[in-house]
Picture 1 (cartoon, rainbow, N blue to C red):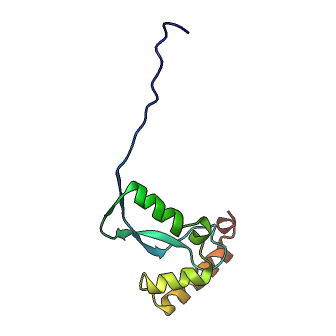
Picture 2 (picture 1 turned 45 degrees about the horizontal axis):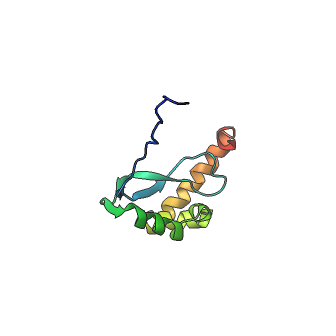
Length: 110
C-alpha cells in the first residue's frame, strides 16, 4: 500500500571460509550395522583459509554424498592408514562390538 515503506532484503556475503580437517577415531554410533564405526577426533590440522567461491567449486567437484559413506573395509583401512591403528587393535575392537551387540541388541538397532 502507499505510504508503507518497502522492506529491503537483508543480504550477507562472505569472502573467505576457514577449514580444519579432524582425525578419524573409533566411534560408537549405533547406526553402523557392519564393521567399526568412525567418529571425529579432537585433533585437527592447521586451519586453511579459502576464498568462498573457490571452496564451493572445489566441494562440488570432489565430494558427493555417496563419497561420504564408507563400507566396513574402507573404514578399517582409514583407521589403519590415517589414524595409525594396528590390525590387531581393530580386530579386538570388532570383537568388543560383536559382544556389545549380543549383550545390548536394542542399542544397536536404531
